[in-house]
Image 1 (tube, rainbow, N blue to C red):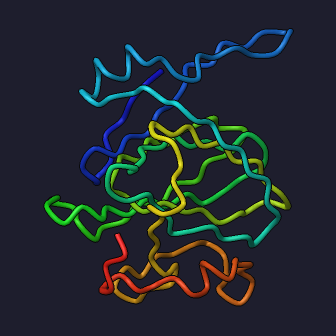
Image 2 (cartoon, helix red, strand yellow; image 1 turned 135 degrees about the vertical axis):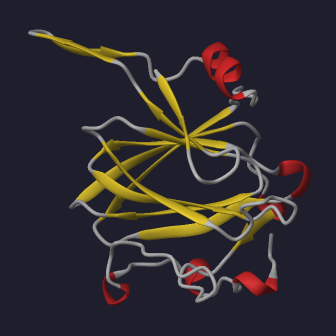
Length: 181
């Protein structure tokens, strides 16, 4: 597996080395020891989540706050998504900056989203199955969010806003300046 730095501090793209033959393919999806050696970050995950969504579904921007903050390792198992990470750590040199990357079942690329980041994705294919590995357990009382279309962040979700399918929670999320993170 190859680990690439992104313009956002502590956020990494993980590209697998894929071995293919007439039987199919094999790749190591994650290796905690390699990850920690190459990044200096903790790569221990305690919870796996899977979601299935159809075209236009936009989930985000979400995070867990305080002692329940979560780092995530995300990937797309079926279909294609536009994945977005936003640095919400006020003491970070990349505070308020965002990164978008297409994750697909075909490219098998993963994104490591550190604690203190907002995260979301929009579905670009007819449907997508999305995987989240989390390094801390979910806690409802520690939920935080930022409005997906906040003008201060100006995120391009690769889905026209009129086509975006949002939960009520995401429609009513506070803006970036309200600091619900």
